[in-house]
Image 1: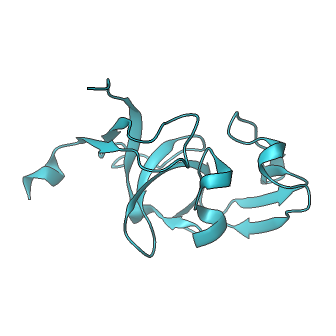
Image 2 (image 1 turned 120 degrees about the vertical axis):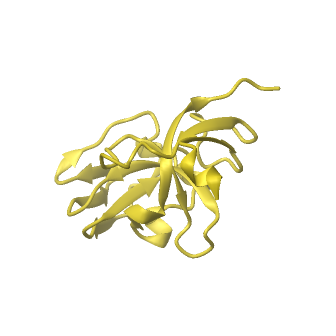
Length: 143
């Protein structure tokens, strides 16, 4: 019961969905209090509970409530503005892959930095803010 009152936690990265930002078996520090007073922002790396399996996942916030996400010709757009980042490369998404999502109230659209190996909002939809556990602050030194 007391563990929920401690704002910082660590988590081991599993899988390859956040490469190159975070490697498998790396430990990250998570601030569970980060969103008590503010909302997640585009670009934040967060830990969330998978909407169906409830397994903790690490993903990057791409869009927030009431924003429109468009995947067109290998690029992501939020509200018509192309979003850039080392994790969003045209090579990662096929030029023929096209989709559009409208993010509902209190929900967030999240992606893995390695889209080839990521199960994210493209697959399970947007994530309700109550499923977001906290913000990733960085990594811990390897033991």
